[in-house]
Length: 197
View 1 (cartoon, rainbow, N blue to C red):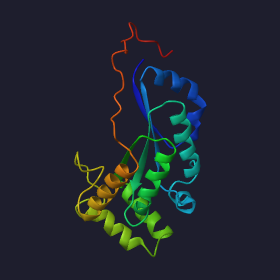
View 2: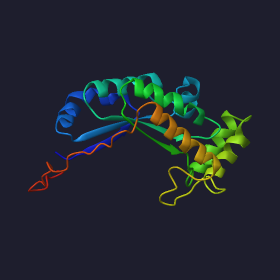
View 3: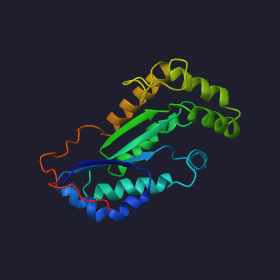
View 4: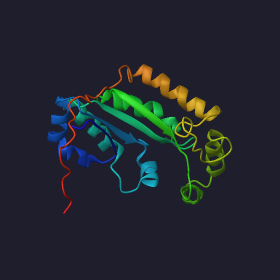
């Protein structure tokens, strides 16, 4: 009876719907579904071999119908590439029964920076400079910021526009009106650790 929060982009979660419903009856679970883009061509470039946006909306709908507190994570928002989709993602998710939402602004830490830069140059050569500089503008001139409190949402003009868009469309779609509080009182520490062998 350990309370858990999950985030997924995979429709295999529906395979365990019966177990998730049991947890939901005891107020022990919340699930967020990550949606990066509703544009199938962009999704295939950003996240090849992952569940389509249409399938992810179905996950939200099925989990919501089953009584699970379900949210959407619009992440990562990449300025100049997919940030304009945030209003549509929030609206479609709310229409599928989602009650809460979150977002992150892309940050490119470590080797991810080189990989993403190469990917962006190859896939969007016409937009490379615009996107790259807007990412930098969200992270004080860098493409990464590890500071707690700013690393997930960034700062600066573009980050502020994304934040304001998020707040406005959450309000318009009735998202984040109530915070989910899972029941921590039911958890009991096991008396003995189970053996792995």
